[in-house]
Amino acid sequence: MDIVLVVIGFVLCLIGIIGSFLPVLPGPFTSWLGLLLLHFTNAIPQNWTFLGVTLGIAVFVWVLDYIVPVWGTKRFGGTKYGMIGSSIGLVIGLVFFPPFGILIGPFVGAFIGELIKDGTNSSKALKAAFGSFLGFLAGTFMKLMVSIVFLILYIRKAIEYWSELF
Image 1 (cartoon, rainbow, N blue to C red):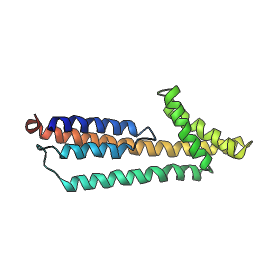
Image 2 (cartoon, rainbow, N blue to C red):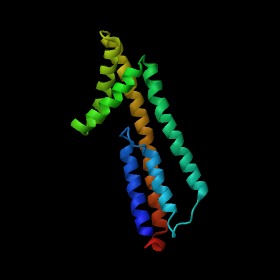
Image 3 (cartoon, helix red, strand yellow):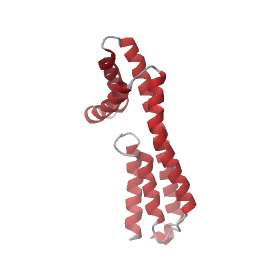
Image 4 (cartoon, rainbow, N blue to C red):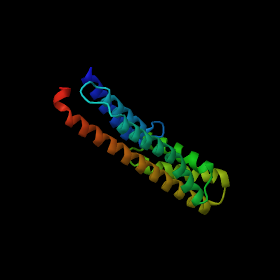
């Protein structure tokens, strides 16, 4: 059973990294679930302080992921239309133009969203799209870094107890 938990936990950590880019998956929280599964094995002692701190970090990053893009969009004069357009642009970019769609899609989506809101003011829409794009990049970078750190912690803990696991 321990091997199954280790494998599923590792897969969850990898999905968490992927989830850092996809708006439908909570990246750091998914990676944290991998850490939790690792601590449910019989070989690795449960460290509730470690799990509590990492959960707190995952929740904090999850909350910040909603605040940072809004702040970036508002700071550059954007609206909710730009944020929604950015999310839609990300999905379309991922589906039709991988891997560059991850960067181009949110920017184009925010620009189109702002054009829908304002109509003809393309310079204001471009400025707001840039803010939305910067907010998206900051949130994605933050989630990616936390998910990678969680994966590193996972691997270190698995290596530390390797002989007990297998």
